[in-house]
Image (cartoon, rainbow, N blue to C red; front, side, top):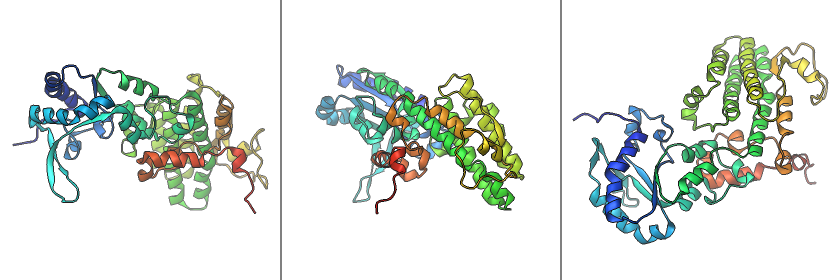
Length: 385
């Protein structure tokens, strides 16, 4: 017997809930107020699943959210009712999978239906209090890829209104946190953009290509921030980028830079893509509007307002760059919260780290972000004797 016909996981789980699970719960617990959703892990949560996704952790599944008291009182009965009432397959897909039971290594079949109190689930997934707006320090410690896990997907039922309220609170960064991340992203671009040409002129073609790729990723992350969208897990980063409004303009410039054999073409591609995003910033009326411009690196550092170098700049540093530092400064000046405005320009946890393990560990990401979110005065303090 062949594999059942593939349908997107969000639609599969929607039908699974309404046709197979909701009737069981209505019969067994007619007065129960609960939520049902497909959020959290999985490519299907972001709508990126394909037939290949069905080889692991995929199929008809749900998360149920009960009040804490109801969960404590009913969890066993709830599980028993679902085990008895939900068929072994739905639309040809198995509703139970083999899971490891732990020390014995033996496995048992289990429904892919999780029951949680929302506060506990959010604490485990994001490391924050689900009942209130996160403080700005917490926002800097939550990777965007984890925020997508909560704000994407689908909600099929929400009797208590908790899921809607949570997803509204986390829909996007507060204004000043967003501006801080934007400014820091422009600062990242400004720090390395001239190195494409410098390494190329040294004959380090591999190094120039690596820097081009790093900057292309930084520009793409800037595109998500400019369009006020969260950037996903790396596997889906390019796919999600292609869905941005600016991708038709920015994408070909980045592709040209990545394919180029000449360092000048690489520079022009990266600088042109950055210019397009700076112009988009202006068109959208975002705070910190500043007219962008391209020039050589030598011209840029001689411009008024640019931090002085130690020894001056030779006139032949003809690397094509954008006025990224000025753009970052203009955005930072619009931050209203004095504490956020004074932060060191390293940004949020997923701007200064791309460790898969780190970004998947909520309590650690919050702790790391807290540790590095020093204000600029503290960063510049001399070491203790």
